[in-house]
Image (cartoon, rainbow, N blue to C red; front, side, top):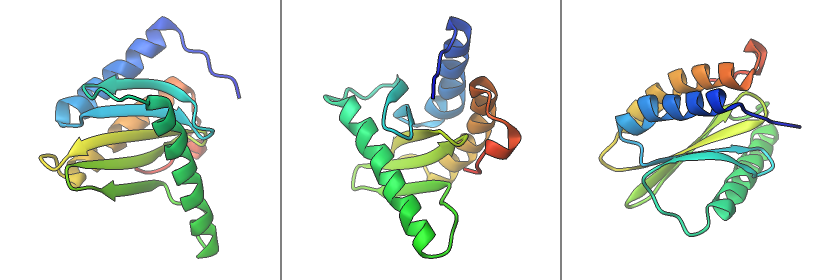
Length: 137
């Protein structure tokens, strides 16, 4: 898999993430491929090891996909973890990428899911994912 973005495409992704997610209360958004490679990040959190977070998130999503198969599902399109201070929402972007959204308890999960749905539709266009590769958020 090869991924090359132009300056315009990268700017468009940042614009989508900012307008749809960060302006709605998300603290940080990370886009990774399913191998755990960091594609991009936007937000206000300072993280010591963003690369480990990207790799572990992809592994977590892969493990959950295997659980889905064990119970007769093809896959799960999203994953959510609630913490005391911060929450993490994972959602598929096309068939090869994940959007990881970090947000605190001041923001509802419903709002994040709503905003992610439209953000992912727009991001799929930038990534060039076809309609059959899109997953619901």
